[in-house]
Length: 192
Image 1 (cartoon, helix red, strand yellow):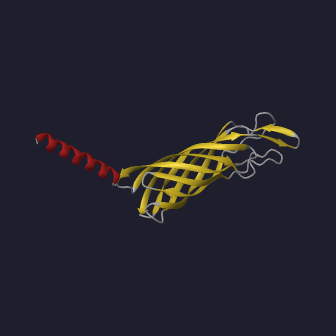
Image 2: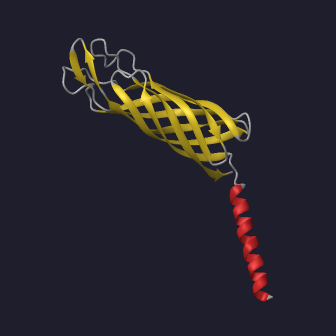
């Protein structure tokens, strides 16, 4: 009988621990994720692959504010401009942005955006084989997304863009730091 009481007590403690973990306060959370996409338009880059890191505070149960950063690597692509092949260099975007999210229900679809500044990093030149201009240093950054969420995971269709103006153009090739893709993120509750 003594071992039966210990077994029941141990089971109760483990169950209570698991239930507490599942009911952790989700008002403050760290979000870690990854994204992959196709460059849009695909003039100087073909695709991107990135990591996302953000902090979110649920101001109300349906509205979150926070900060976001990360790194997106854009893979350069060869492009023909006026009969000349341009070997565009890879580059990266490091955003520093405000995060805004709207959650109509506790679980299900959500939408939002990141707004801020995207620092462009990498080789100083746009291309490696022509008299290339310097690449832009950065610009206004936006990343709207719509997706599905539950307590632990987010999956979203997203568009990210760093606006560079006319900086980095080679002939008729515009410099583009934008991509359409999908992202997945994991939520880590930080408590109250």
